[in-house]
Amino acid sequence: MTEGLRIWDLGFGGKGRVIFILVLFLIPKSHILNPLFAGSFNRVGPANAGRPGEWLSLFSAGAREAALGHVATGLSGAAAGHGNPAGLTASGLGQATLFVAPVLSGQFQALSLSHPVAPRRYLGFGILSLSSGEAEQTDSLGQTRGSFKSQDLAFSVSYAERVAGTFNAGATLKTVKQSVAQRSASSYGADVDLQVPPGTLGPLGFGLSVANLWAPKMTLDREAEKFPLVVRGGPSYYKEGLISSFLLIVEALSIDPGDENSVLRWNFGAEFCFSSRIFCARSGLNAREVTMGFGLKNGPISFDYASAFHALGLFHRVGITLHYGYLSTRAQKKMEAEWRELYAQEKKIRNPSVQEPASLKNMEEKEFSIYLNELEALIKSGRLDRADTLLDKMMSFRPSDSRLTVIKTRLHERRKQAVIERDLINGRTFYAAGLYEKALGPLQRVLAMEPGHIEAKVLLLLSQARVDIENRNYAAAQQKLQSVVEINPANEEAVRLFRQTDKALKKKGE
Image 1: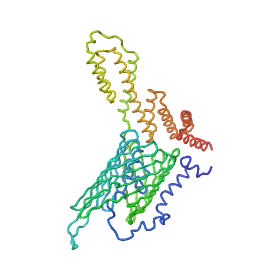
Image 2: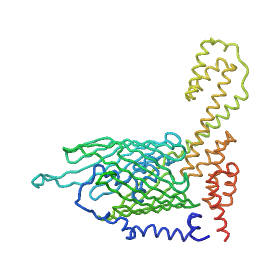
Image 3: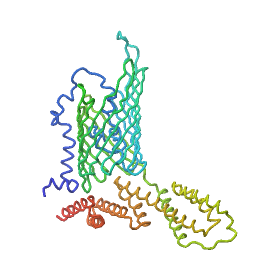
């Protein structure tokens, strides 16, 4: 096996890391790729203010995207949702991202939020602002009449969902506003997106975004200006090793496709990450600038930095992301208390009291039937707390009524399944976010309540194997991965990790 293959298969060897990082940071500064962008870096023709709303496709909403040459369709997370809302579904936990980028005498700012509303379903919210510094205002004769400022704002609401287990789909509704001096105008628009994340069908992925499908139209002065259709998309490649990963994205961006004045631009981005994204090195290239940067992650906080080498100078961009959805110690104790309470209830159900004092047989059957129907409706609608309260009152009148005993058993099972589903969702979410140790607790509780739960058992073994791999305990990881394959021989992740750990063990023994 060649050294090059070892670099990829084992998560990049030491020499591979050094070589790759040097290439990652030095190639963008060179002129190797200039022929591909011939004429793109230098303005051709007279200068103009660009097309209406063009700033929305030129700027990213996060420092990670900015460091990767402003690619968007192959990424995931709250900030990536600005250019590709379909990527919200790969966010894992909820995310809130703040991004700041100085622009000459002005500034670009973005606040993005990604919030899970159900498994594999996310809502996204975004606020983008582009403001300029003060500029001289003149009249038709060229006489100075003071100064003015301009500002562009965009507010968006996005929805994304995992479809058929293979691709993500998303849509965005947005409102945009432009203010120049004393004039302002606003309008509405919509975007749609599709994404096949890398890793779903192998290392390759693909993203496609159509912005301004419903195009905003604003009248700032005399003539109405309509935002052009913007189509962007391209392939991505993702390779994950035991302790590192590599991502490469190529993206084409077309403004007004089909129009004689249409514009086609290319964006390239490459990212190399260590140890569950604790540190990432990034570099990118597009028609306006070359970019580079890095990312640091510590628990729920991520810090990202990007620099851009532009014809007008060097620009610095920073972003910070909060990954929320982590269970606090208090929430963890509350869940464990609920779990113990469920078992206490189950014990009582298995050993019910059969004594019924005669004085409690005073409720009329008709009235009792009404309460029974209400109790059934509460359970069916999922209002289990209210159902519990009503059931307790009814049992105080008829503690040995067989109908109430059956309902109590059903209510207990519903509560048990609700706790199992909640813990399972937390386990899935933590695992998808790379928080393998945090996934252990919820999955262990699921198996304590339902020992035969196959998904929880497989996910727990994979989480334990990942923790072993992070600690370089490859032999222990292999035992767990082998157990996964015995349960599900078609589990590709377990097979891939087993092969990688096997190669790591062989290299360790050399």
